[in-house]
Amino acid sequence: MAVAVVALTGCGTAAGDEDGFTLALVEPDLTTVPLMEAADRIADDGFATEIVELAEPELAIEGLAKGDYAISAEATSPALIAIQQGAPIRIVADVIGNQWGMYGRDGVTACDDLVDKPVGIFSEGAVATAMVRDWVSRECAGGEPEYLVIGGSDVRAQALLGGQIDATALEIADVVTLRETSGSEFETVVDFAQELPDLHPQTVYANAEFLDDQGDAAAAFLAALVEVHEEINADPSVLVDLAEKHLGSEADDTLAAVAQAYVDAGLFDAAGLTESNVQSTIDFFESAGVIDHLDAADVADLSLLP
Image (cartoon, rainbow, N blue to C red; front, top):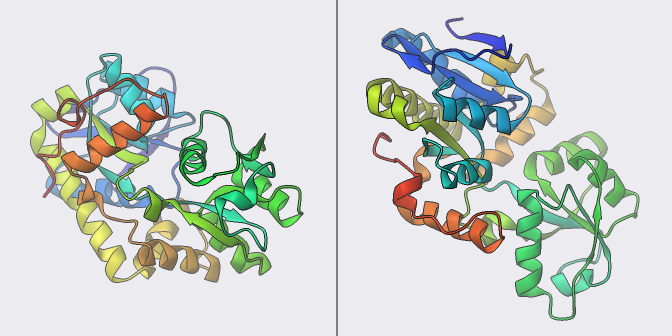
């Protein structure tokens, strides 16, 4: 395969040169497989892309700011925080749409059903928590839930199944996986993709100097990413095949069901960012107290999208 995957060793590699660039991914998963495939494909155009796997989003942001990496793809809010602090980083495309929803036990159908009831969150600073609190502030007339910090999504899902909490925010992949592996069904209380259609919590961002110096390489990568997303939307089994290729995943019914759920929800659209929805995303994080005001024109460079 034309793409090399290496571990972070502590000394950065060049963000890019005339022959290629470095792509930093944080614990690659099904949502970032299309980026790995895009990097693979542009090798045929002469761009010898290197993929660096990192454990924390902050490491990717730091490497982008210093020019050690050219492109990364993760949560949008850390990139916005870094840009606000003067980091030369620009948002250039979407990784995946808003895949979060609030799921509850039987009988929970509205926000007021959760007033004074236990609701699981990952952490106070998590983007899903910001979505939950935003929804509660607008929809709960009688008060708010009792928030409980409960680790990862799998732990929260089990707490929901066990009756320890009445609701929690989960990604669609977690819900589909539990349904396929255990037959468990959760009540969808709110689909945040519908509730907050202009919020893009996971985006592709790049070092600004790399964009200026190697626009051709960046454009080739983004065009390949858009192409991969289009192929997945036309046939979800493409995502299953790519997960086998890049992650070593087993092509089973659960993986196929997750891929179908992503496509049914319209979550793969790398070129779906606009100045308007980037500004809406900024405004959401400003309202949540994560950042101060920023203008989309100073945050994003969408000019290289096909």
